[in-house]
Image (cartoon, rainbow, N blue to C red; front, side, top):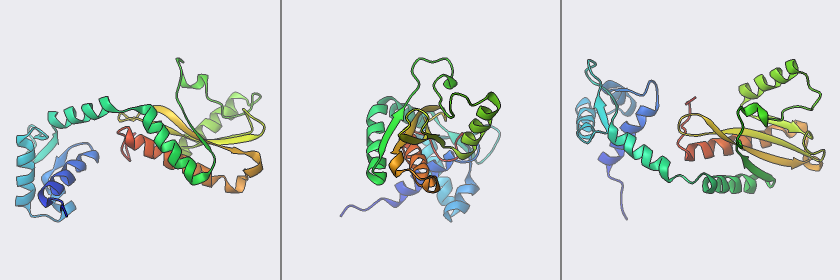
Amino acid sequence: MVRPVPAVTRALDVLELFHHGDGTLFAPEATRKFQLPRTTVHELLTTLAARSCPVPVADQPGRHCPGVRTYRLGSRYAEQLDLAAEDRQVAREVAGTCGETVQVAILDDTDTDTDIVCVAEADTDEDELRTVLASVRERGVAVERRESDPDVSCVAAPVRDRTGSVVAALSISVPMIRWAEEREEEPASLAVGGADALSGRLGHHEGQQ
């Protein structure tokens, strides 16, 4: 049985700390986080810095920021991403959980994202629309009740890439015979969970905007 190498695991744990805060890392932060001796953290950072993974921040002793090696690795990961394949995989997983139709949609040659957004009926006025949009931003999920199809309601959540930009939306369509407003949170939670999972596959991490 092959066992993980503790030193490698610790080095990767240290690198993952750059996901948090302002993107820099002060050595004592890693010491406190992992309850490691200061010398161990110093050796890890020194070894990683020798390979240009983290690099020291000028005029801030003990503080490091991601180096060019991590940028190159991240860029290579982004280059090989297949959005369509990731979409299909996550959509299948969510559909298998809820038993409903799941779609992932993207914008198609539009100047603004409001060109294809449908969050209310055609006679909703501008003030109401703004109120609905504000609610969608706050909840992180949009609900469409029989607006595009009288027999179907949908919930949708945004999919973000590694930069934090919204690149798609994952939605779950539920026939009205199985729709109940008191159970709306169930498909909404699944949509958010699926969108978050797909976002993670695209390089987005929790807490990033």
